[in-house]
Length: 323
Image 1 (cartoon, rainbow, N blue to C red):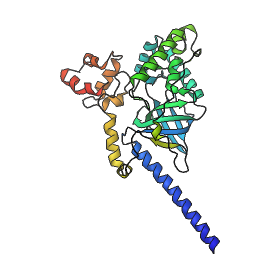
Image 2: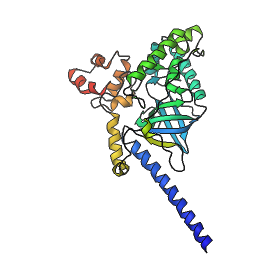
Image 3: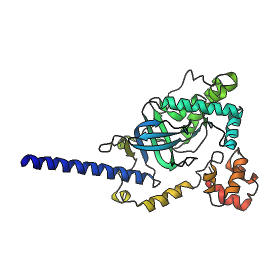
Image 4: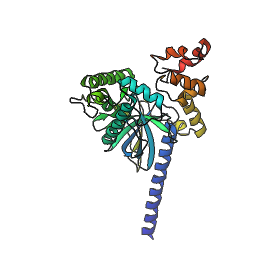
């Protein structure tokens, strides 16, 4: 009788722990989408082979869950001609032809596949990166055993210092990382490797003396916490732990807050924004979005007035949304 009662207690205790783990994971996933400034750290990620993967965007699994990530701050050439305007812009940046740009994109895809063949870590705030996939895509910093993946791509001439900006974990602003990326890009250009060396037959030549790549960390006071029964998903914050009210955010509230982040002022890059991103800006419809894309590249968003149909009034309305 006593033995049977002990077994029942062990079963009940296990059930409670499992239930708590599931509830905690759901709370974290929901809170992550409320536009908070906390970094979500996904450890022991595995690359999922997918035809849509490329140098700066790919599918990954964390435990039993699948995600689609897009790197912050860097842009690798497209691997096909599905977005011709963007491909032309990328080819112009590297001073190569469109077919050559696709070759660079394919090389970047293979480089990323190789670097992510071992488990890696993802830092994300679950900010919507949109894209052509039906699956929701999130911006992220990705760290391999050698350091930041974006920096490795740029240093080997397989991506440019160009893209959606964010302040990396533990840094005060994005400028420091942008300057680091620019230095790495300049080195790749000087060595004529990757996209900078296509015409010299050096597309697949790698950096001879690569500098140490950044290893982003969060503040020591807030180390990653492993979830019960799942050492993969943890929330990092420079502030004290979330209050009960944060955990109780409703799906409707989270969706509203997330929608606001999508069109936050000063967040959209005029040269890399997709049509969908542009159309989220009040005053920009499909026709105007297409005109903006066709007018690229811009030296800055201040050149928007050069786009047909954008007068002083419309310019004043949409300019604050661009970087």
